[in-house]
Picture 1 (spheres, helix red, strand yellow):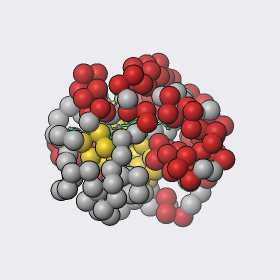
Picture 2: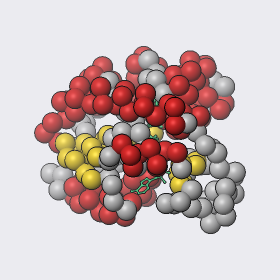
Picture 3: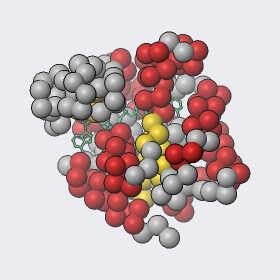
Amino acid sequence: MRLLLIGPPGAGKGTQAQKLSKFYGIPHISTGDILREAIRNGTPVGARAQFFVESGGLVPDDVMIQIVVERLSQSDVEKGFILDGFPRTDAQAMVLIEALKVMNKSIQKAIVLKCPDAVILDRICGRRICPQCNAVYHIINQQPRIIGICDHDGTALIQREDDMESRIARRLAKYYNALDSITRHFSDILEDVDANQPPDDVFANISGSCSRVA
Ligand code: AP5
């Protein structure tokens, strides 16, 4: 399965990608996670991306394209992958399609998660993440067993810099402005899924949709 998860910030792409990754036994490639790790580790990519990520802007295409093309050349993507957060521009979509073509592959399904802005605001403001394993929690909807601590590795949970309420409008605007220029490349394999439901119901709809891939 080679799957794209498209959706506004906070729609649940990361949450669903983690479930799908376990279910299909294929890697979850989150460009947001890759960038946050690069920022934490102080790499040159992190230094270039930090301002854009933390202010809710888009990291330049050349940086993103290099990250994804390199990631797709690794052997664990042979069986498939779930791409979360890429492509986010017309140029990124075109490069992705071409890079896969060279490998005799293509994206098989593109899911667009739909969620009202008010729900998104609540989800983002309440989100906490594990900086070690990238597990995603919510202070009300998806609590860890011990408040503030990751269930998987005991790391203290953090709030993302870009999850401040003041940044969310900008992130949403960037998403909606680019949406058509991304989805037009995948119109024949595109399916909308209502993300404003409990996570297991969203998962059932996505996996149901993936099971219909030819
Ligand atoms: P990225 O990390 O990709 O952020 P995003 O797209 O804004 O998406 P989020 O991670 O905010 O949300 P999500 O949909 O994954 O939701 P989640 O599952 O966490 O990118 C960050 C930044 O990096 C970008 O702004 C940009 O600067 C840069 N970047 C990344 N890729 C780029 C690219 N290709 N080009 C240029 N720049 C790029 O869930 C959210 C919360 O809701 C959680 O608390 C969760 O527990 C809860 N939740 C999830 N599902 C449900 C549900 N069904 N019901 C109730 N609660 C739920």
